[in-house]
Length: 620
Image 1 (spheres, rainbow, N blue to C red):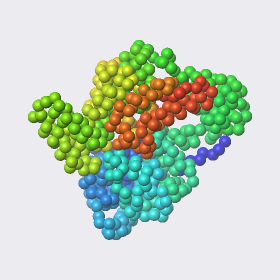
Image 2: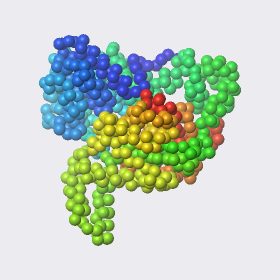
Image 3: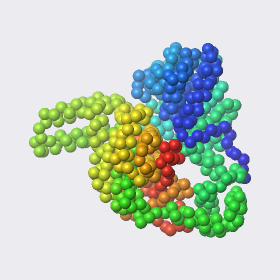
Image 4: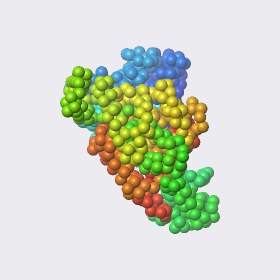
């Protein structure tokens, strides 16, 4: 048995919304407690704090939360960066908070990304001086980057560092590529508060959400203080708290292997997790584990619960075996809807089970929630324009309307700046490119084009990486498709770590529609694969795939040509989606084999939830 290795207070909530409300209300309490005295806030940008800002705006509008005595200092800004740029943190803060509350503009401080290089040193010194003159930061909001950075304090930053110009880490720029439509467009430098500046704040809240943050969160919370992970310095702060959703907390010892920390209330899911874990670290199949294995690895209480390893091994082995469901054990004659956030998530993450369910004479509908049009490179549009131009000439089509369209699009693309929002014409062309690819892909799996629905949810239609919140119209569209299909089963994307958050928002749209749905609630099957895969222990259904079935699934992925070779938003993992899927599906089958179950070529994993659970929390 070991002590809890967490070296900083951690608050885990099931959903991001709970975190955002908790932190926003802490800020509101602080502002109200100060009365007419000023409150100094350190603010962050990006997707992590947006929920906090929305809740603060709501409290200002509905509860009269007064910002007139609030002073703000932002963590950082890219360099060089115009304040008017789509990517500017100046613009982000005004659009997402400042212009919606009564915060005096003179009280706003954000590092400038548009000053001459020769004036940067004076600028950062003035920034430090302004913080000191304000009396220091009362409450500092932080996110954490995948390098462990806070602000833009990359690996190697010292605990004493102050506000300064820094060179961005390659991983940081790769992660930011989604916002800039390509890593080559991400500035190489930024101005950031230093670790020392941040640590002088009287209270600090570090927020992290999503499975993709789980590994670095564990290092920050449980690892030694390390210059290579700036967030570990927070362990030395007297009033810092880490706020996590369930997915970001997944690698913490208390969540991943809680049995190592002491007595616990066992249930069947925890028993399976513990035995699978033991099987992996001992490299023994489940049925070969013995009493000594359990005792030597901190599982004496579980052994005592069953009296012998043999009985426990048999129970877990049978539970694992029951998860394996080939085509004959999958539903037949049911109404099934597959929700796909982007026009390729269905085949990437659930192509095998989609084909099997369709082959089982279920009434299957694939509903693409967004157009995915911002993930199409401009050169793909030019290729289709050339096809239109040549085909019109071949068949003598009248070009009175076509020629002006082609000319307008060509001229727009020629003058387009990196990251600039596309014209309506280009957005429509990119939408149609994604749609025809999606139809071609599902036909590889024997699913017909008339089984597809393109919902084109409004929240996505900003033309930018940052989307609008899920609104009433989004929910109405989702409710409409539920009422049309009236599904017994709904497949929903459960990997919530895509680079720009669309999967999470699409999940929320499903959940909110289910709250209003008057029909019999469907069973929810969560699929994963593009970013993470469900573990064998947490999966409820394991779907075997033959070599031929995996080949057909990969062929379907190949039909999404605009995403092949170099997807616009690959995340940190630069492999193509088909490569990720091949590795993950084979790895799942390999682990099942190691556990002593029959050997399969590949496997997809599914987590099953009741509709009521899906409307209350994310699958992680």
